[in-house]
Image (cartoon, rainbow over all chains, first blue to last red; front, side, top):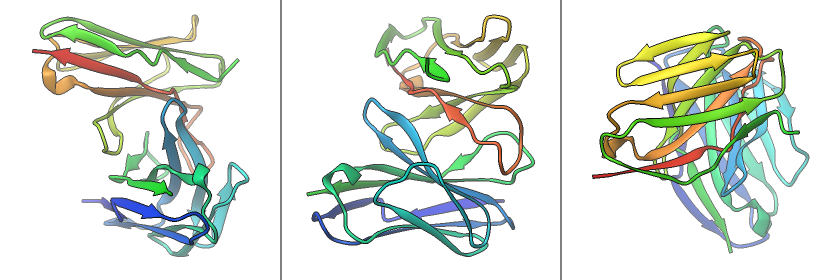
Length: 112
Length: 113
């Protein structure tokens, strides 16, 4: 069966520090991968999605970037965090042949 | 007008009540309609989905889609405290890599014992 792993679960980082969040999917190949941010009162905001290795689409221009170095690995990064980067970050995947996404357990990021 | 509108609540009901959660949308190209349940500090999980118009039932849950009114609903019968969560509707025009889900903001539901 397919599983999605996302870590860390909680992260407190100072303003100006770098960020790296990792997501991996097991039990499937060539998944579509997504990074979302969820902020209170704003719902789920799609940040990046990828349909293959090295193929990254950005939905919102901001202080973040994403990379997909391997088929089942998706990384969200920032060189310098801002206070406004605080939020709940969710990775998700889909096979592209069925309805809906499967989400990871999320990373709660607090920038201080 | 936003693509998907969902009343954020919060909604508080007694145990055993029938709960109705709703979303409206503006994009007539949407064909797949989903409901996700998200417990506090967890990722959303797909509860059920419907293709095009009609009803779908799964245990105590019923999803309805009215494409003519661009209105979807999720009904929960005999609600339980374990149903307390945020419910998000989501929609897409198809399945595939380029098809992205559009989410509502979610409705927070509390079922009181």
